[in-house]
Image (cartoon, rainbow, N blue to C red; front, side):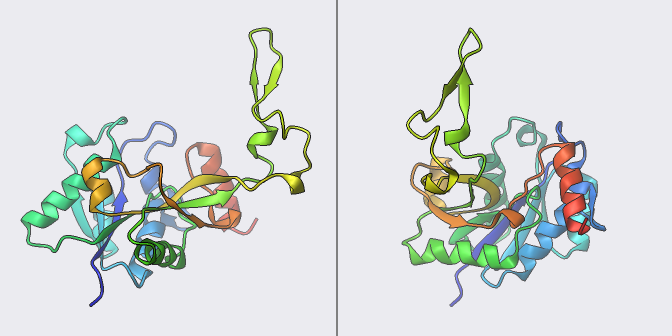
Length: 229
């Protein structure tokens, strides 16, 4: 029997960096719609829910054919941990008689380039490796820590990795950055309140599917990329 896999999309109405970002139009669709469609197309996801405090986002989501869970104000603030929204959604589903999922796939709307393939591949990793949590990542290239510095009070640059600061790019050890596209975790992580833990498997995604929208500039770049400019 197919395991219960919950695709969970957190979508608050408020955003300081990009106001109303989950509703902003990207390549002809509201931003959140890209994530909803990828989740719906994933073969291993058995149900998709959107958790939101925003009526317009709720309407967009319902029009896309997914379940909406209304998020209460006390867990909808700028500093509210997303795990609280996950727990709330699981409680609501349980009260409605829905089966407990064997894992949750957290899909942030700010990573609209992820594909159903990425979701299915990350879920498969979770089950194939004894339900170890999975985090999607992208390989660091020119933004490798070997190219980074702190700065002294006198303004002098101090290399973060002095032993590698003069190494050629091709000689640097691979380093990965969380791209925010896919997180897969189970009841153990929900109970611990830790979506991001010290022991996670990496699902590597290419750079051209790893752009994440945190600022207006990010949105403009992605609009240009998806328009083929």
